[in-house]
Image (cartoon, rainbow, N blue to C red; front, side, top):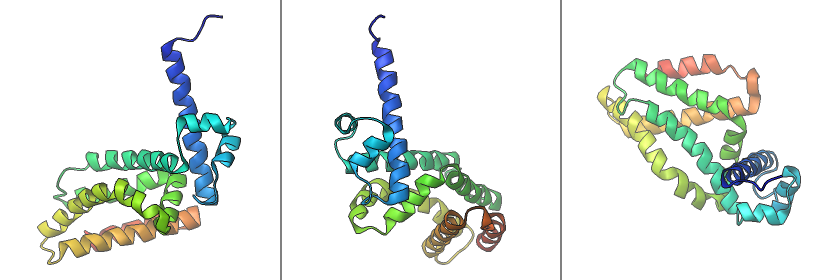
Length: 191
């Protein structure tokens, strides 16, 4: 048997890293960030704790990598929007896109929302999400401003808070939550 090539080694490393990220996401989502140890992640992933530290030097670095993965997914959604939402159809497409992202990885969003209320996670959230959220909210502010809204920033924040509530309802109730009806009503109210 010949030694592995550099390409094979990189592929193995990538697969291990993905296994660790997926395992940590599941455990953080299920037991919380504080309730999950590096030991439990290594055990669940089937790798040694020492090897785990070769990939991620700390639990915080691991959490940051998970949050960045989710942010990349959401950023791709934002990049698919027109830079300015000019029509009600653009607005509806953007809102429905948010729901597609939510449904595509509910485990990630359960973790995201659980971390929002944990003070020790706030600095990490601000570092990772604030620049994105500012850009995200600006897209909707511009839409409401163009529609003649007197307080487009406030309306944009109201929309964001309402979406957060819808997302939480769906994450807690699953398929029992009338997501389509709620979403249709939300779109009608805001467009």
